[in-house]
Image (cartoon, rainbow, N blue to C red; front, side, top):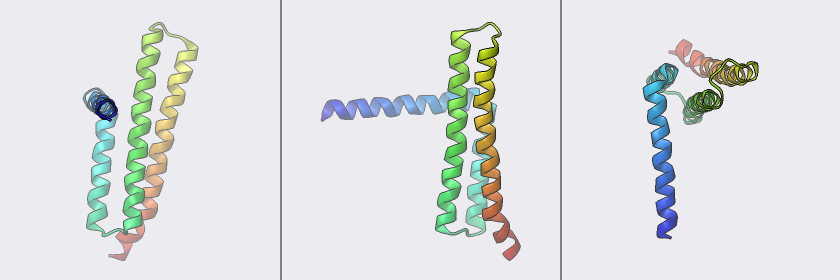
Length: 121
């Protein structure tokens, strides 16, 4: 039991370390955090429903998770091969596309949730 708890704490520590790396080294991660906090602020201000709030939280997590995975994949690609390589470029482009898709999805969902509240007040 004690060993299992220690392993879980170690995993949690690694995850927090990854968040700190993303915060320190990725400007886009900081921008996405700011957008997420802004969305939460307006959610409270506009009194969105509990379900809408959960959706907003999920979407924020979705964008931040794809950004973290994109960053990890870019780091891995750079470690594997530092020279320009068309396969590595394709991998990086696909990872960046995942972030773009999650961000556009978040924007659309935000519009669907927030616009009716804005026009009803």
